[in-house]
Length: 230
Image (cartoon, rainbow, N blue to C red; front, side, top):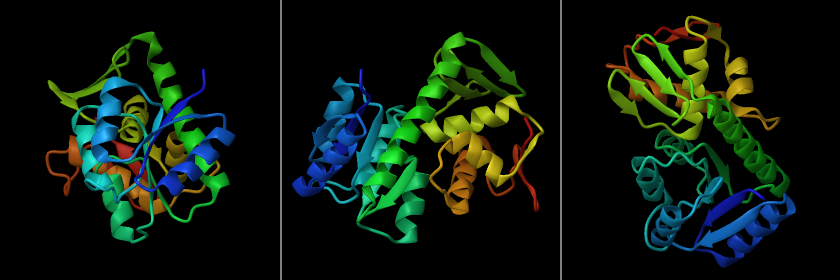
């Protein structure tokens, strides 16, 4: 069965182009032309990835993403937007998107990003199939449900945040360079900006640190990378 992508965009021409790109990569598609329609579809069906526009007729894509993540849905999300300001991409990543692509986009690059993100997410699911519990300090990962906890509190993470935290939990005290994090978490030949890695590090700190400005778990090792201290 082909992987299924939800396209959320109110521009019929863009939807048609995105469907063409995805179909050429052997992916099934479903289109939602509004935020309300997208949320309704996500409540009734499962998707392997979401392509989200920022400017929708009834709301902003950012608000839809926040609702998706607050509902505990960790489906990978790529924002596809004509807004190319750094603030928009950083904000989109900070609220739970996994990538940000600006219009006009190169179809071959977008197709590669979509397939790579679906592949990485599927690998995370496969890794969880064993049903093991991973306990590291005050952190716990239940592979049978793919849920993360700090103490008794469940951590609500996006797909890429979960992959990054799992990497740290499996390798406490190990220093990871940005290149190593990129290799393990992004798993794609498409280049990723160093700033994107920093965004995800900061997002994780916001969710697991008592004081994100003075982290005690995800430490920056100057000139080398990052180290996780459970």
